[in-house]
Length: 157
Image 1: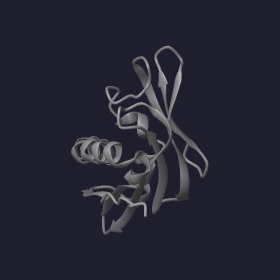
Image 2 (image 1 turned 135 degrees about the horizontal axis):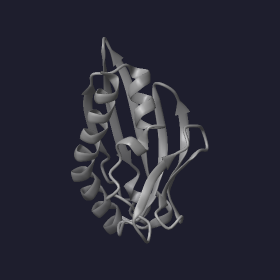
Image 3 (image 1 turned 120 degrees about the vertical axis):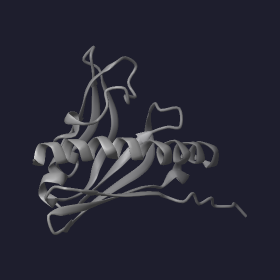
Image 4 (image 1 turned 30 degrees about the vertical axis):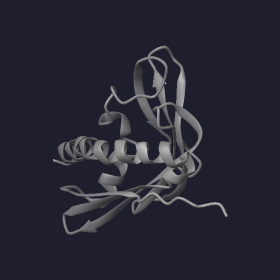
Protein backbone atom coordinates (compact mmCIF):
# COMPACT_ATOMS: atom_id res chain seq x y z
CA UNK A 1 0.00 0.00 0.00
CA UNK A 2 1.29 3.46 -0.89
CA UNK A 3 1.03 6.13 1.80
CA UNK A 4 -0.43 9.46 0.79
CA UNK A 5 1.11 12.47 2.47
CA UNK A 6 -0.88 15.49 3.51
CA UNK A 7 0.77 18.81 4.24
CA UNK A 8 -1.35 21.44 5.99
CA UNK A 9 -2.09 24.60 4.02
CA UNK A 10 -0.64 27.95 5.03
CA UNK A 11 -3.39 30.44 5.95
CA UNK A 12 -2.89 34.15 6.51
CA UNK A 13 -5.51 36.84 7.17
CA UNK A 14 -5.23 40.62 7.28
CA UNK A 15 -7.48 43.67 7.20
CA UNK A 16 -6.98 46.43 4.68
CA UNK A 17 -8.46 49.93 4.92
CA UNK A 18 -9.73 49.87 1.34
CA UNK A 19 -12.79 48.72 -0.56
CA UNK A 20 -13.09 45.13 -1.69
CA UNK A 21 -12.76 46.09 -5.36
CA UNK A 22 -9.74 48.30 -4.71
CA UNK A 23 -7.95 45.63 -2.66
CA UNK A 24 -8.61 43.03 -5.37
CA UNK A 25 -7.34 45.38 -8.08
CA UNK A 26 -4.13 46.26 -6.19
CA UNK A 27 -3.41 42.60 -5.43
CA UNK A 28 -3.86 41.46 -9.04
CA UNK A 29 -3.48 44.12 -11.73
CA UNK A 30 -1.36 46.25 -9.39
CA UNK A 31 1.07 43.47 -8.41
CA UNK A 32 4.07 45.38 -9.79
CA UNK A 33 3.36 48.27 -7.39
CA UNK A 34 4.07 46.18 -4.29
CA UNK A 35 5.70 42.80 -5.02
CA UNK A 36 9.40 43.08 -4.04
CA UNK A 37 11.88 42.89 -6.93
CA UNK A 38 14.14 40.85 -4.63
CA UNK A 39 11.61 37.98 -4.71
CA UNK A 40 12.23 36.74 -8.23
CA UNK A 41 12.67 33.21 -9.56
CA UNK A 42 14.36 33.92 -12.87
CA UNK A 43 18.01 33.46 -13.76
CA UNK A 44 18.77 37.18 -13.53
CA UNK A 45 17.41 40.24 -11.70
CA UNK A 46 13.67 40.88 -11.98
CA UNK A 47 12.42 44.00 -13.75
CA UNK A 48 8.83 43.50 -12.59
CA UNK A 49 6.20 40.88 -11.86
CA UNK A 50 3.28 40.59 -14.29
CA UNK A 51 -0.16 39.27 -13.38
CA UNK A 52 -2.65 38.97 -16.24
CA UNK A 53 -5.96 39.63 -14.43
CA UNK A 54 -8.26 37.10 -16.13
CA UNK A 55 -9.09 33.40 -16.12
CA UNK A 56 -6.20 31.60 -17.80
CA UNK A 57 -3.96 34.64 -17.37
CA UNK A 58 -0.31 34.17 -16.60
CA UNK A 59 1.62 35.23 -13.52
CA UNK A 60 5.24 35.66 -14.49
CA UNK A 61 8.25 37.79 -13.87
CA UNK A 62 9.96 39.82 -16.53
CA UNK A 63 13.71 39.92 -16.07
CA UNK A 64 15.87 42.97 -16.67
CA UNK A 65 17.31 41.03 -19.61
CA UNK A 66 13.82 40.54 -21.10
CA UNK A 67 13.55 36.87 -20.10
CA UNK A 68 10.30 35.58 -18.62
CA UNK A 69 9.99 33.15 -15.70
CA UNK A 70 6.54 31.69 -15.11
CA UNK A 71 5.23 31.75 -11.56
CA UNK A 72 1.79 30.35 -12.32
CA UNK A 73 -1.55 30.67 -14.06
CA UNK A 74 -4.95 32.01 -13.01
CA UNK A 75 -7.15 28.96 -12.33
CA UNK A 76 -10.23 30.73 -10.94
CA UNK A 77 -11.25 34.35 -11.48
CA UNK A 78 -14.16 35.86 -9.51
CA UNK A 79 -13.52 39.60 -9.12
CA UNK A 80 -13.71 41.23 -6.66
CA UNK A 81 -14.29 38.26 -4.31
CA UNK A 82 -11.47 35.80 -5.04
CA UNK A 83 -8.96 34.23 -7.36
CA UNK A 84 -6.87 31.06 -7.42
CA UNK A 85 -3.48 30.72 -9.08
CA UNK A 86 -1.06 27.88 -9.54
CA UNK A 87 2.33 28.41 -7.88
CA UNK A 88 4.67 26.59 -10.25
CA UNK A 89 7.80 27.03 -8.17
CA UNK A 90 9.81 24.18 -6.71
CA UNK A 91 11.40 24.01 -3.26
CA UNK A 92 14.66 25.46 -4.66
CA UNK A 93 12.68 28.55 -5.79
CA UNK A 94 12.95 27.76 -9.49
CA UNK A 95 10.17 27.49 -12.09
CA UNK A 96 8.51 24.05 -12.17
CA UNK A 97 5.96 22.33 -14.40
CA UNK A 98 3.67 21.65 -11.45
CA UNK A 99 3.40 23.24 -8.06
CA UNK A 100 1.20 24.30 -5.22
CA UNK A 101 -1.81 26.62 -5.34
CA UNK A 102 -2.72 30.00 -3.84
CA UNK A 103 -6.27 31.23 -3.22
CA UNK A 104 -6.92 34.79 -2.12
CA UNK A 105 -10.36 35.92 -0.91
CA UNK A 106 -11.49 39.52 -0.41
CA UNK A 107 -14.38 39.98 2.04
CA UNK A 108 -15.95 43.43 2.35
CA UNK A 109 -16.45 44.48 5.97
CA UNK A 110 -17.74 48.03 6.09
CA UNK A 111 -15.00 50.37 4.90
CA UNK A 112 -12.39 47.64 5.22
CA UNK A 113 -11.64 44.40 3.44
CA UNK A 114 -10.57 41.19 5.09
CA UNK A 115 -8.05 39.40 2.89
CA UNK A 116 -7.67 35.67 3.41
CA UNK A 117 -4.82 33.85 1.70
CA UNK A 118 -4.53 30.08 1.57
CA UNK A 119 -1.43 28.47 0.04
CA UNK A 120 -2.08 24.74 -0.40
CA UNK A 121 -1.38 21.48 -2.28
CA UNK A 122 2.25 21.26 -1.22
CA UNK A 123 1.96 17.46 -1.54
CA UNK A 124 2.47 17.67 -5.32
CA UNK A 125 6.10 18.57 -4.62
CA UNK A 126 6.77 15.38 -2.68
CA UNK A 127 7.16 15.15 1.07
CA UNK A 128 10.58 16.80 1.44
CA UNK A 129 10.05 19.52 -1.17
CA UNK A 130 6.49 20.18 -0.03
CA UNK A 131 7.42 20.57 3.62
CA UNK A 132 10.30 22.89 2.74
CA UNK A 133 8.08 25.08 0.53
CA UNK A 134 5.36 25.17 3.20
CA UNK A 135 7.88 26.31 5.81
CA UNK A 136 9.34 28.94 3.45
CA UNK A 137 6.00 30.48 2.47
CA UNK A 138 4.63 30.31 6.02
CA UNK A 139 7.47 32.62 7.03
CA UNK A 140 7.42 34.69 3.84
CA UNK A 141 3.76 35.54 3.26
CA UNK A 142 3.45 37.90 6.28
CA UNK A 143 6.08 40.28 4.83
CA UNK A 144 4.62 40.05 1.31
CA UNK A 145 1.11 40.72 2.59
CA UNK A 146 2.32 43.69 4.62
CA UNK A 147 3.76 45.22 1.42
CA UNK A 148 0.41 44.62 -0.31
CA UNK A 149 -1.46 46.25 2.60
CA UNK A 150 0.79 49.34 2.51
CA UNK A 151 0.24 49.70 -1.25
CA UNK A 152 -3.54 49.16 -1.08
CA UNK A 153 -4.00 51.58 1.83
CA UNK A 154 -1.63 54.16 0.42
CA UNK A 155 -3.36 54.18 -2.96
CA UNK A 156 -6.80 54.22 -1.31
CA UNK A 157 -6.17 57.37 0.73
